[in-house]
Image (cartoon, rainbow, N blue to C red; front, side):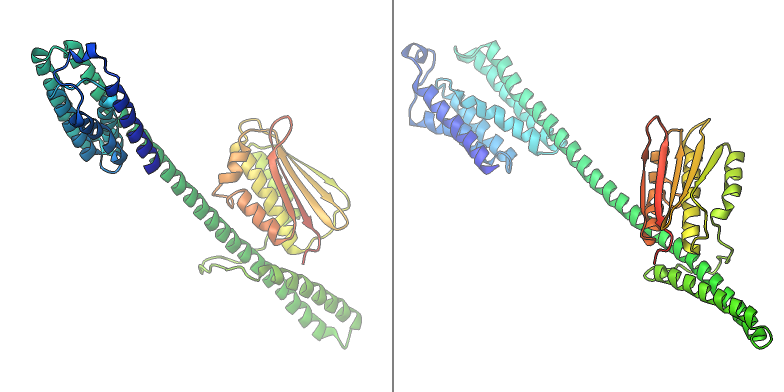
Length: 385
């Protein structure tokens, strides 16, 4: 800033000195005084203060206007130093608030115009055209400076608003992650509690029949081993999560892929016909995996229902592989992408889905599909640990 303004001030001064030196003898006859030392001092007064035009716009304007008025009163030959007046008015409009710049600028313009108009009566070199030029050369830079100031203020407010929105978005994303983790923690807690209940019941059964029916006791102990393994698996995923206790959450059986038919019927009754395709040999999944797979499908279908538009159809594709299960939910509607990103009622859309998948060491992709619609594809290890 300082370098640029200094260069502008020096350039304006140098050009004015050259213009003053280049005045021809014929032109000198139109003016009362020939250039002397004071003429160059006044030229400097109209140009060199521009170096401070951004930090002291009102002071710079005052100095330059005084130098200009004295220069015209002494009737030195005209030079390009008058551009300093235009620069000063422009800086006044650019750097000061609207009301302040107008309170200073308009009265100074009025004084300059009146001064020039009086000169038209007493000085031969001043005409009515000069009065108009002075009016334009002062008012136009001031108004242009005001436009620059307003544009700068608008851009600043826009940047600040963008920063605030970004911070708010990040805050909402963090809250969404915390809420989703809390919900997953509650669900996993229920799963582990269920497994522990099974273990307790089977242990009691094994104790009762261990002497009379060793075979049945062995089956009960095997069930305990399986339930214990599943419980430990879910406990590993539970570590690190905070569970918000509200004292009102009832422990209810958690859904799984076995309830897909009921979910599809519910969606169809709500206006979203849904088809199901199963590939591979279905096999029991760990409870946490089964629950998360169901929730991902439920989340995707709910989004399609809300944002897919009328006459939307959805399809579910389940692929059972040796070491993983692949879930694909697609629709032929519109608007699903925006819904997944911002859906606050069903787990915050993709935020919640990705949180679930990350907990299971799986992967998830989502986006528009060829031919229209939206597709969500998740891959979950069958025995994630």
